[in-house]
Length: 213
Image (cartoon, rainbow, N blue to C red; front, side, top):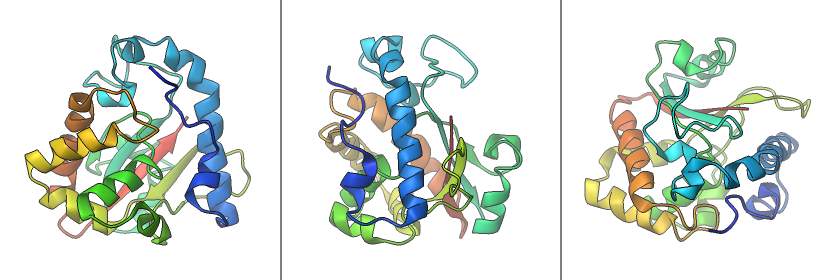
């Protein structure tokens, strides 16, 4: 199986002229990717054709637990202020906010492709949305090891309205992307089902990602 992470920095592929805060966030993601690549290659998840974030194992351990990749928990909050406040609590799992726990499901690239697939718009159009991947907490220092990132309402609504067959088809198409090539579509579909279930509970709330090393 090929490398789990793309060889080029995310910020070079996402936006030819990203904002300074976006560039720092993407470099943080890239740094984590390179630091954990060797551990990922040898992990039981990769050897079985699964990514750590696409398994049902508990976050705290288990055969598929790999501490070398970032947490990417997706959660609902009524507004950006409350979402950002979850950072001080150690992430949404420490709050009462509805959350789907995951690992290494990148909110910029993976969810950008997912939104393009589910909505029929181009990947470039998704990236042009100012809401997509917007960092809501400070990344200016470049040393942040956790951040809250916004997910578009467009993707939230597309997930909420997606039928099971559409999620299965999206999982299969995601395995054709560079970042998820070679992974088991069934594992990706399982994550999408859980994320769609979260989106259906939104009732006007917004979707966010808690990214942490």
